Length: 260
Picture 1 (tube, one colour):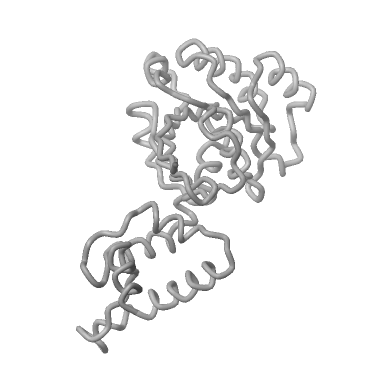
Picture 2: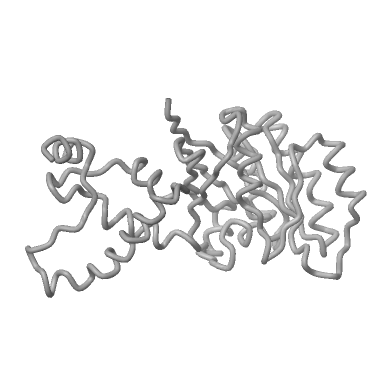
């Protein structure tokens, strides 16, 4: 049976520790004013698991701000997992980890916590491998990863986090939708969200599964559809009311092939 679920995930760490870069790459959509007003910003990450199950991660990105620290305990409630970041070149960001770990464990229980050491590409390193291993072992953290701007490693990190939350026993394939790489996907969903025959809405999860499929024949079909999607920008001018571009819904697909 296909699963569909939503999980709350805490993203925490010192200011400047690389949390936003991890979530967005070089694309920065958050408004800093929002952070300082309420101490947290929100991001939805849509995941497709094994090209079948759907999971929406509600990321609560905490801003290290002393004026709103009193709100952090209530923000932790209901979280199913956490990602903590620290900057390998900043000793203070490493020292803050104990505060974040104890806060999360006290308020959210023994949820999976994955530790991320950012800026691994920089030479001015301030924390040793032994120190990192000690904090992972002492607090029994779920996992640990080095990342850099050129090697963010999101898929492996989210894969381990999802498996650790005991909802998905084995993830062989994980597709993640992020603001810096989902423009084609958003255009695809917009172009093919409605059946061209009966005008009913196509199922979002089915379209998503097709878009992220890895099979060769489906990749070729998707490539052709994306080209048509781009070319169809001129259809309204040249072929108004003459060509219908779209993907039939399940009912129309069955009816069409039953007749033909």
